[in-house]
Image (cartoon, rainbow, N blue to C red; front, top):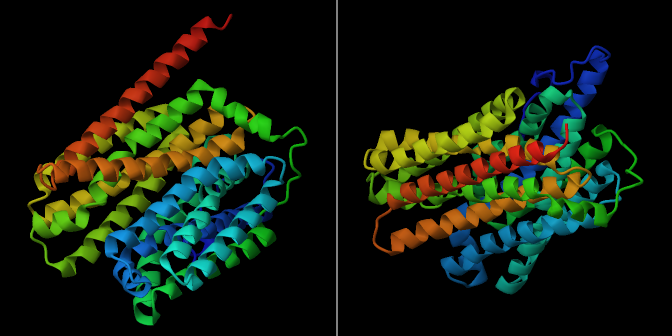
Amino acid sequence: MSAPSGNFDALPDLALSPGDTPRDRAADRRALLALGVGSFGIGTGEFVIMGLLPDAARDLAITIPEAGHLISAYALGVVVGAPLLAVLGARWPRRNLLIALMAFFALGNFASALAPDYLSMAAVRLLTGFPHGTYFGVAALVAASLVARERRAQAVGLVMLGLTTATLVGVPIAAGIGTWLGWRWAFVIVGAIGALTVLLVWRWVPFVPADRHASPLRELSALARKQVWFTLGIGAIGFGGMFAVFSYVKPTMLEVAHMPASGIPIVLALFGVGMVAGNLVGAKLADRALMPTVGGVLVWSALVLGAFVFTAPYPWLASLNVMLVGTAVALGPPLQIRLMDVAGDAQTLAAALNHSAFNLANALGAWLGGVTIAAGMGFTSTGWVGVLLALGGLAVFAWSLTSSRRCDLTVPA
């Protein structure tokens, strides 16, 4: 399985301070590559089951909707595990924590390949989701520490590139092998990527001793910061629109656009292209103007989600629109950096909670989209749901700015 970023020599020179040497920059690129391989593995592991649900359902003697609960179990594991492991790992050196998280993830996927029945499989998928958010949060902190402050979002974007590339490369390859050799082999592959990440992080990510003042209580102090909650709210609501549309993109393309089933992989690939592009562009813009990027991405999301209502009947227009919907992932890097800026000393918990918020957005968007479809509003109604969620995120964003300005005014000059 190829690494998400290809040749690490092609990665941009992110750390360009005057004292840097070529060797320093090469070491930083290797560290970023190691972190990106981990996000590639997690992204592949999270989404590959979606393409193998009929095979898993048949083997486990359950219905396809019941097999879909395996996806929900993993998402629940992410939501619960991110804050729990971030707090428990507060005193760990970050490299050691990353290694432990990826070892847990690898073992969880190997166990998924061996689970004998539905209940054990659901329990294993729940536990396998635990390291997801904490890994991304800690990896983002490590990536940002490797570069100059004005390039933090791009470093975080390179770590997230593994996740977005997984939707374009990792998931189709793992799903194809799973279809050929058996669906359980997909989890063996993901476990192997996790094991490879353990090795790469150990070899390439620099060891930094743990902060001796770190503690679970200090990490929990993030929950007392209003701007942390605002930022999480922006992600949990504003990001949900993308999932409202994407969760039902296949039946929409089949029933509304009347696209043949053979064209669906192309649509999914275009969505992956949009995610990769949005991640890179969003990270670059965030380094130039952080908060304007957050607001701009939310406005852009509302526009492209609303456009889907009108392009859905036309196969090619709808396909291109789905790609544009994928670019909404540009919201990820700037929100991750915003959490770093407002979390104070509680960096690990705040960074990990970002991915809990995104998984809540996944659940919220898919649920609301299903509600409107069930109410007889048609598959295109998911576009309107997406618009409302993007505007909801924009409202939280505006509230956050207003609250921040009021706070600044109350601080003595």
